[in-house]
Image 1 (cartoon, rainbow, N blue to C red):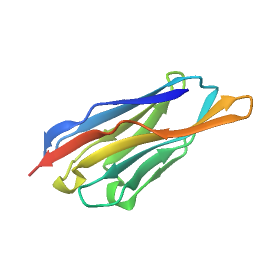
Image 2: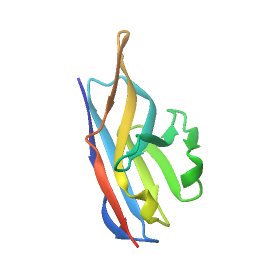
Image 3: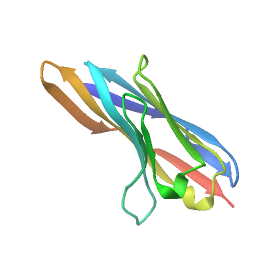
Amino acid sequence: QVQLVQSGGGLVQSGGSLRLSCAASGSIFSIYTMAWYRQAPGEQRELVADITNGGTTNYADSVKGRFTISRDNAKNTVYLQIDSLKPEDTAVYYCDADVDLGGGGRWYGWGQGTQVTVSS
Protein backbone atom coordinates (compact mmCIF):
# COMPACT_ATOMS: atom_id res chain seq x y z
CA GLN A 1 0.00 0.00 0.00
CA VAL A 2 2.57 2.56 1.14
CA GLN A 3 6.35 2.59 1.00
CA LEU A 4 8.79 4.89 2.74
CA VAL A 5 12.13 5.11 0.96
CA GLN A 6 15.01 6.84 2.69
CA SER A 7 18.10 8.43 1.19
CA GLY A 8 21.09 10.29 2.54
CA GLY A 9 23.27 9.32 5.45
CA GLY A 10 26.85 8.11 5.43
CA LEU A 11 30.14 8.82 7.14
CA VAL A 12 30.91 12.38 8.17
CA GLN A 13 33.41 14.09 10.44
CA SER A 14 32.40 15.66 13.71
CA GLY A 15 31.01 19.13 13.10
CA GLY A 16 29.82 18.24 9.62
CA SER A 17 26.35 18.17 8.13
CA LEU A 18 24.06 15.70 6.44
CA ARG A 19 20.59 15.77 4.95
CA LEU A 20 18.30 12.79 5.14
CA SER A 21 15.23 12.35 2.96
CA CYS A 22 12.25 10.03 3.22
CA ALA A 23 9.72 9.80 0.39
CA ALA A 24 6.35 8.14 0.75
CA SER A 25 4.63 6.52 -2.21
CA GLY A 26 1.56 4.42 -2.82
CA SER A 27 -2.13 4.83 -2.15
CA ILE A 28 -1.83 8.04 -0.16
CA PHE A 29 -4.71 10.41 0.44
CA SER A 30 -2.79 12.54 2.92
CA ILE A 31 -0.10 12.17 5.55
CA TYR A 32 -0.54 13.20 9.15
CA THR A 33 2.60 13.29 11.27
CA MET A 34 5.98 12.32 9.83
CA ALA A 35 8.92 11.70 12.08
CA TRP A 36 12.55 10.72 12.37
CA TYR A 37 13.85 8.25 14.94
CA ARG A 38 17.30 6.86 15.55
CA GLN A 39 18.73 3.76 17.14
CA ALA A 40 22.31 3.48 18.31
CA PRO A 41 23.91 0.06 18.91
CA GLY A 42 22.60 -1.46 22.09
CA GLU A 43 20.10 1.33 22.59
CA GLN A 44 16.38 1.68 22.14
CA ARG A 45 14.95 3.55 19.19
CA GLU A 46 14.32 7.16 20.17
CA LEU A 47 12.34 9.99 18.64
CA VAL A 48 14.54 12.66 17.11
CA ALA A 49 11.92 15.01 15.63
CA ASP A 50 8.44 15.02 14.20
CA ILE A 51 6.35 17.34 12.09
CA THR A 52 2.60 17.56 11.57
CA ASN A 53 0.96 18.12 8.21
CA GLY A 54 0.47 21.72 9.32
CA GLY A 55 4.17 22.18 9.91
CA THR A 56 4.30 22.07 13.70
CA THR A 57 7.61 20.58 14.79
CA ASN A 58 8.89 18.85 17.88
CA TYR A 59 12.49 17.95 18.75
CA ALA A 60 14.32 15.83 21.26
CA ASP A 61 16.27 18.02 23.65
CA SER A 62 19.52 16.42 22.53
CA VAL A 63 19.14 17.70 18.97
CA LYS A 64 17.49 21.08 19.42
CA GLY A 65 19.36 23.79 17.57
CA ARG A 66 21.30 21.28 15.42
CA PHE A 67 18.62 19.26 13.63
CA THR A 68 15.87 20.66 11.43
CA ILE A 69 12.90 18.64 10.26
CA SER A 70 10.87 19.80 7.29
CA ARG A 71 8.44 18.33 4.79
CA ASP A 72 7.17 18.86 1.29
CA ASN A 73 3.53 17.81 1.28
CA ALA A 74 3.31 17.95 -2.50
CA LYS A 75 6.10 15.37 -2.71
CA ASN A 76 5.05 13.37 0.38
CA THR A 77 8.61 13.75 1.60
CA VAL A 78 10.14 14.55 4.95
CA TYR A 79 13.69 15.81 5.44
CA LEU A 80 16.10 15.96 8.33
CA GLN A 81 18.90 18.49 8.11
CA ILE A 82 21.60 17.55 10.58
CA ASP A 83 24.25 20.14 11.42
CA SER A 84 27.09 20.27 13.93
CA LEU A 85 27.21 16.48 14.03
CA LYS A 86 28.66 14.80 17.09
CA PRO A 87 29.98 11.25 17.50
CA GLU A 88 27.02 10.50 19.76
CA ASP A 89 24.71 11.15 16.78
CA THR A 90 25.99 7.91 15.26
CA ALA A 91 22.99 5.65 14.75
CA VAL A 92 20.64 4.15 12.22
CA TYR A 93 18.02 6.76 11.40
CA TYR A 94 14.46 5.76 10.53
CA CYS A 95 11.56 7.79 9.23
CA ASP A 96 7.97 6.98 9.90
CA ALA A 97 4.64 8.26 8.71
CA ASP A 98 1.00 8.14 9.72
CA VAL A 99 -0.90 7.93 6.43
CA ASP A 100 -4.53 8.49 5.56
CA LEU A 101 -5.40 6.07 2.76
CA GLY A 102 -8.83 7.60 2.20
CA GLY A 103 -12.13 5.82 2.68
CA GLY A 104 -11.37 5.36 6.37
CA GLY A 105 -8.13 3.47 5.81
CA ARG A 106 -4.94 4.28 7.67
CA TRP A 107 -1.33 3.07 7.45
CA TYR A 108 1.56 3.48 9.79
CA GLY A 109 5.05 2.26 9.02
CA TRP A 110 8.78 2.76 8.81
CA GLY A 111 11.44 3.48 6.26
CA GLN A 112 14.27 1.03 5.71
CA GLY A 113 16.75 2.90 7.88
CA THR A 114 19.95 4.67 6.96
CA GLN A 115 23.28 4.63 8.78
CA VAL A 116 24.81 7.87 10.00
CA THR A 117 28.34 7.55 11.34
CA VAL A 118 30.17 10.51 12.83
CA SER A 119 33.91 10.26 13.27
CA SER A 120 35.70 12.28 15.93
